[in-house]
Length: 151
Ligand code: GDP
Image (cartoon, rainbow, N blue to C red):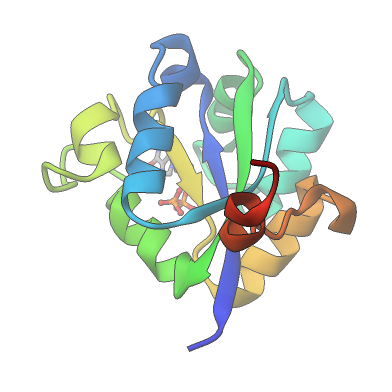
């Protein structure tokens, strides 16, 4: 199976609750590679653009307000089947319905403040990764090169 790259966002609720380390630990423990990582405070325009598919839904303005309320951590995650694996690790949208052991089940507090975002398909993953990251921002990690280097 080919390697995929997907977009992950640690949302403002999880950043404010000092859960960035916990979430990154779960990502690395699950065997997903961090190909890119950046902290950013989204502008209203950027958040509205990113969530464009949800325009017109009753929760849209509230979602934009929340997503711009504090900084987020943007990540590109790489691995075999990375899109589905990250969705699995996140759990379903509503933390009340998310199983224990998933990030949303353990760390989310409401259907809106659900700690993390993840692309929902391979097609959207490519669009979403490139919404936030340029080609030069995405790193290829070669552990063998690292271990061969230096002394
Ligand atoms: P996701 O792919 O699991 O993140 O879910 P969606 O694409 O359906 O929704 C995007 C985001 O909008 C979710 O992660 C929530 O933060 C928020 N959201 C979804 N449904 C609701 C809702 O019914 N009410 C509110 N307030 N926010 C919602």
